[in-house]
Length: 502
Image (cartoon, rainbow, N blue to C red; front, side, top):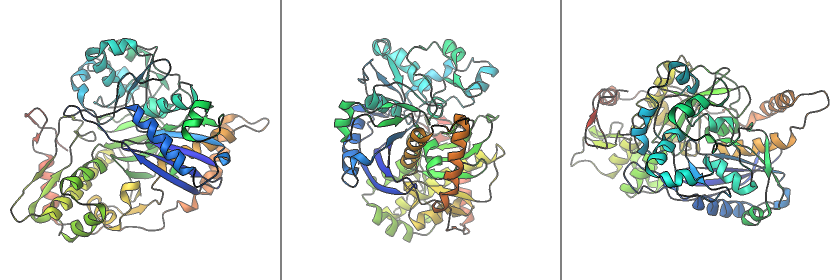
């Protein structure tokens, strides 16, 4: 069996996968995201380590630890863990939702067109490059003291194995990586003045990175020396874990944030600079991405504000008519990426009246997130992506009424993919590929991997969409309300207005 660990923004998930790809056991463990100042998002890595130990111990209550043949990892993208040479964190990790590095984006502006083409991504806050520039300016002592600047899942693997590495899917989300050249972007590092010695070597996601140390084995309740794969970023791992391995298909995944992705056979940046381009978990494959920063994050916030549990959300909110009697919700609690690329956007309920109750507020939150996803889908379509249907994945997409609302707002048939732990399953698959990828005589590693992936695709009948959610008409006034507001100045963090449109 294979253990997959997905280090998410608000929780870690551990799954055990059987050789046939079925999930034998799963456990999760939450941890908080701290915001010591407005617009900041941090988590102490020690919280991750503690939660990983608890989640793996719990999942091992359902299977024998000695049945685990390999471990794979996935994790939230873009963050920064500054640590010393032993992997001890020097400060809390700065996460993808953090907007403190807005002023540092100007360092990237003088880059030549060729250098920007290699980065192949919009220059936005939350990425490791701008975050490291902020640390250099505001915490210079820690900046100099650090031995490594790691992505979250790479720090976790360091603690598990004592080995430092990253993979192309995570490296490509740092604004320090050359997607065309497939390496760290040394000219960009030189231009922005960042250290190059603290970036880890880049290995394939399907490679073996090391083995579980005795200390780590005791912490997670497993035998020492279990092989550990390099692993991949959470979105890339989720694509693999949900069977999205063929270019052209479009998948929407909703968790804390949301991602709409399409696999690409070559790295062609978005000429408008609105969408992202990252490496996938597999060799010689990329994916274009619309990144919606506030999805489950905004819904969970709204749910706590109106004091509802999830069963109450589904019972009460969906009893309210579409449009919420004139109430709309902007979900930009931590700014926005696709399509607005503005960390200063802020959320709001607009149109509140005495007749509105908590059910109206919650229904409006659901509609606002759905319309934000529609904006991201429109930005992806503007790059030439075309799809008559969308695959729907993620733990935040399982309720039928929520699925129907998404189909209605996007005006596309949706095919739910029944793998709510897709990232963790993708991590487990990477472990299986890494351990079993020993090529036969006269066969290259690439050919061996291609053969295994072909077998995997043939076995993915369980992932094949069986249910189609057909879109229903929605009130034109509601569509116009959101479309109109997307073209108006929006409230921002510093009290000024911002005229970025959708």
